[in-house]
Structures are given as C-alpha cells and as structure tokens.
Image 1: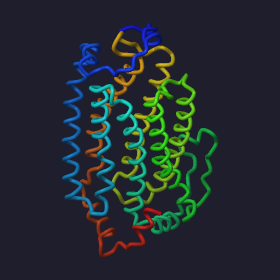
Image 2: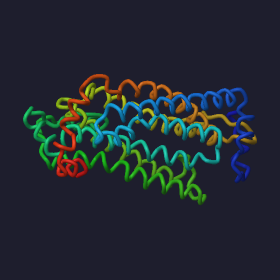
Image 3: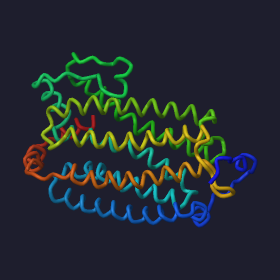
Image 4: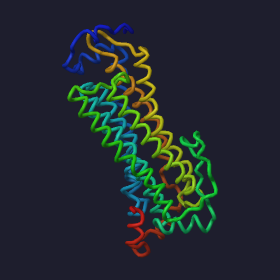
Length: 326
C-alpha cells in the first residue's frame, strides 16, 4: 500500500475494479475480511431469522411489521457491506440504500412507541397526566443552547417533534438518490473538494441531525411513560448504532481529504480503499449490534401479552391507528 496516489489523479480510469483484482490487491486483509464477511453476514441473518420467529410468537400482531423493520437493520447493513467489499462496482448503489435505510428505522421506532401507548391522543394524554414536559436539552442541537424544559406536550407540538423525525427518511432518500445519479453521470465525485458533493453532504448532515434531535426529544419523554420493557435501553442502542454508522462515514471522508487513506496501484484508488475500509468496519459493527439487538428487542416477560390487550383488535380503534401515522 502507498499514500502517494498520484497515479489515480493522472490516469483516466473508468472501469471499476473486479472482485478478483480487488481481493488480490488487498492481499491477506482482503481474503480475511472476505471470509469474515461471509461468516458474519450468515450469522447476523440467522439471528434475524430467530428474531422473526420470536416476533411472530410473542409480539402482538400490530407490532410485528415495525419490530421487523428495527431488528432487520444489522442484517441489512451486513449484506450491503459484504456486497460493497466483494463487488466494488456496486458501492454507489449499496451506500445509497444503506444511508437511506437507517432513518426509516428511527421513524418506525417512533411509530412503534406511539402504537404501544395507544396512538397519538393517548400518548399526549399520558404525558399530560404525568406532567412530563418536553425536554429540548437533547443532543445534538442542545449544544447551540436549545435547553428549554418548561413546555408541556400537546397534540400540536407532538406532531411537530414527530415531523422532525419523519422528514429525515424523505430528505435522506432524495439527497442520496441525487448524489448517486450525479456520481453515475460523472458530475459528482464523493470527495469533499467536489463542490456538489460538499453542498449536498452539508445539507444531508443538517437534515439528519434535525431528525436525531427530534428522535432524542421524543424518546426522552416516551421513556417516562412507556410500558415496553427496557424502553430507554432500546432507544439508546438504536441511536448509537445509527449515529456510529453515519459518523464513521464522515470521519473516513475527512481522512481521505487529508491523504490518510492509502491506495494500491493500479487497482485500488483512495476512494475505493475508503469504501473497503468502511465496509470492513460495518461488517464488524453489524455483527456486534446483531448480537446486541436480539436480547434488547426480545420480550422475555409477560409485558407483551399485557400490552397486547391494550392493542388487540377488540380494544384498538381505527382512530388510534390513524393517530399513529398522523
């Protein structure tokens, strides 16, 4: 490996590196992580299948779709990372899917939180009854002075906080699709010195941090009323997983700009190497979080059955379901 990658600046390389060339250029690192990726992805997939069996057996029917979305995240990340590592030419597609998928999981967690409490109206009423105010002093926007704690929940401000979370999947999807299209057209290159990428990247970060702020504010309030076992732990684990996956992408981009990402001439450019390193990290993280998600999101007591009475077809109304999606 070399940090002098002038070859890739002087050469016009259009064809993506093949799987065989990529693994051969990476040497022992490529072989080791190729094998590890296959084993870890199979392991995470097996854990997901076990989780689905448990979801079907133990969770109320109204929860199942949303819980499945949440527990599938480590498996999806692992599969996309493995494909990126083995097939570098698919990196743009896989990265677009991964970066767009993560915010949807956060949105579905909020949906599930509201569903468990009986819908939008019942949640607002519970928050009012227990006199729980909105805690605006939550990361990441608390660092700019948003630390008000004396505002009470009502239908309007709960919908506003929900909208902060719900905008994230939409704008992340649109921005990531636009970046993928522009990159395929040769207009955009995923390096910070490219003006189009830098502009879209900054907009992407802003919308993402707004969504994470809304998620933290809502889950802080919900954790004080939710009957879902270990709710604060579930919310934190999901938050840490999504933020870690997002932040490491930014860190690797900055390292690439500083010339800290090596290359392997003539096959692996610094951009391809950065994606390979990120994929390897994601494979390890997906395995770790897959193991963590299974016990954290697994109901091990009678709380699901007790809450199931609250959300069973005989007691849940169509209005409540509409409220969840409002």
